Every structure is written in structure tokens, then in C-alpha cells.
Image 1: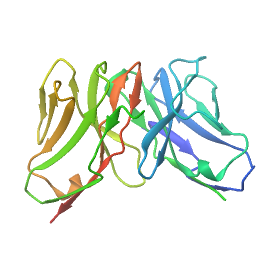
Image 2 (image 1 turned 135 degrees about the horizontal axis):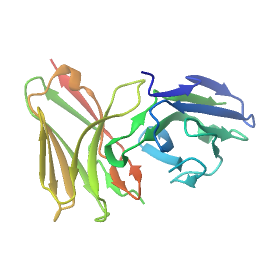
Image 3 (image 1 turned 180 degrees about the vertical axis):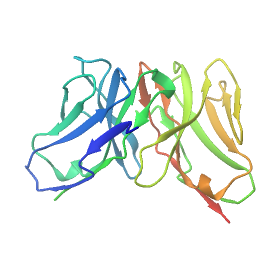
Image 4 (image 1 turned 60 degrees about the horizontal axis):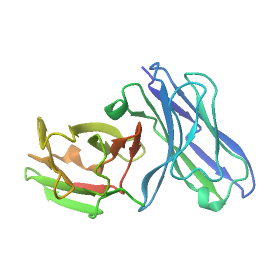
Length: 112
Length: 110
């Protein structure tokens, strides 16, 4: 009963490096989301995918790209990491909208 | 433009007493209001919700109140327990997305 799995859990990048954060859910949910959490800012939506094959920008999409590879997987890519992208990233999935959100345990990313 | 605001970043409450967490919102078009709870190093988990057409919803020790005229949402926890120590968020649900506030860190003092 894994729910939402995020990899890696921790990552340190140098400025300008690229990386992809992986997210997979095993609940057959249609919708998936990427949030970032910063001190004093709460959780802010980066991108979301309402269904397989669709993606939309959230509140803070700049500097990120996403891929909804299939119904289970939704990846977040940083093409050229910047220190401002140091954050904790959470992936979530939803099958029932308002309270069907299940979050992963997060990826702590540090860009130096 | 932050649509949901939690103006108290932290709150400390004695074990057994009532904890009251508050949120103010600006967008009257939200369909539902929810409370999520978050422990360190874990993702948020759903706690309780309220429809925009209701003014109260209760689930065990947790009660959520919605004051539409004041655009104010509150969560009451009675009695407070040490396991309630966490960060609480009041995201609103609209356009199939959750919009989060900044959270309130609740500390229950034994």
C-alpha cells in the first residue's frame, strides 16, 4: 500500500545542473500535482495534470517542466537549477478532487 | 495574490484545552474548505472539510466552522492531545486545485 512514492528523498545540486524528480502513484488516480514548500510561503502549486496526457501551470511554474508519462507517473524537471529552487517538493494525486489528495513524503532539494 | 491566509504562524496550547486555528479567505467562489495536517518530513494529510453551503462540520475532536459573511474559517480541536502537534493548513478547493495558505504550527504542551 505505497500510495504516492517520490524519488529521490534528498538531493544536492550545483547551480546550472539539471535533474528530474520522480513521482508515482498506485491508486489509479486521474489527477497529479507538484507543490513546493518554502518557509513562510506554505505549499505552492507548480504544475498539475488533471488527467493522463494533460498538464497545466500552477502558481509558480517558471524554471520547471513536467511530464505525465502515464496515469501512474508524473515527473518534474529542473533544466538549469537555481538557488531559488531550494525547497521541499511534494507530489500529490487525487481521484476525488477536494479531499482525495494523497501526498508523497517529499523531496528535499538544495541548490548550491 | 494569496487567496487563503493564516495570520498566526504558531500557536501553543496546554494538553486537554481547546486549540483554535483560523483562516481568512478572499475568494468567495471556493466550493469547499479543507484542513490538512502535516508532520515534519511527511506530506500533508487530509483532516476535515466543510462545504461552502454549510457553517459547521464535526468529526470527533475536530470541528470546522465557516463564517461566510466574514470570510473566516476556523478549526477547533477539543481536547488537544500531544499528537496534534503539527502544522495545519487550510487549503481551499476550486477549479480542481488545492490552494494552500502558509500554515499554523500548533504545539501541544504536556
